[in-house]
Image (tube, rainbow, N blue to C red; front, side, top):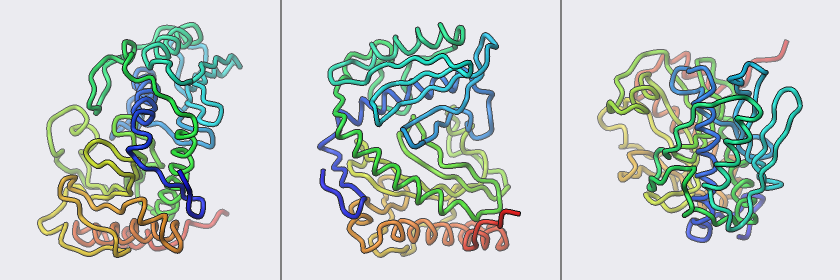
Length: 308
């Protein structure tokens, strides 16, 4: 997978099997967060973080009250890493031909030994497969080189999303790593409530406020190529009828979102600036179309507040 200016190519079809295995491993971390973290609005307690070594939970309270636990996918050394606040550590190799079910069972055994019983629903969420994670022998492909390339791309995307979010003075999420949809996203909120688009569990909890979302994903069965994306909720009539920056950005009817393909970004003269241009033009359009407070919207074109 060749790279362009440090923004690597990530052809979906070349790493799809590894992508699905990695996605399944992130679901295990997410399920631990759901079982242990105190609930937050918009399901923020369930989100993971992309760090300098891979996908990680935030510190999770141990059920036996012994302290906290962090679970991580170390995408440099290719291990699941479980770390207790008292210094205990357990590592589980991520290697080719090792099924997700086997890794999941070892993760759960280690978590219970370190932190006590943990509620864990093994059913995967938002995936085209339904085999419980602790029984999944189908997903066993793990190409470490492909994972490294993915992590390089995801890091570039996360840095762009963080830069877009930085000056906003309203309520906003950090750059979340979502294990259901296997994407990275920032959500900005106007402070107004909104009706969820449907009554299912995720929608009624995650989308009950007016928001603008900007994100990136490495592709899936619906859209088999990596891309930045963005949308507003709720979107008014005519929301999609606008041209965004850069010119390669477009409305994708099948997704109901604006998209900018990763290949168009990485082949531009300045990929980081191309990603920022897309995000900022989408946010400006969304704020105007959705009648956000102009003063709040204007902060997105500012700079982060000074450190005093």
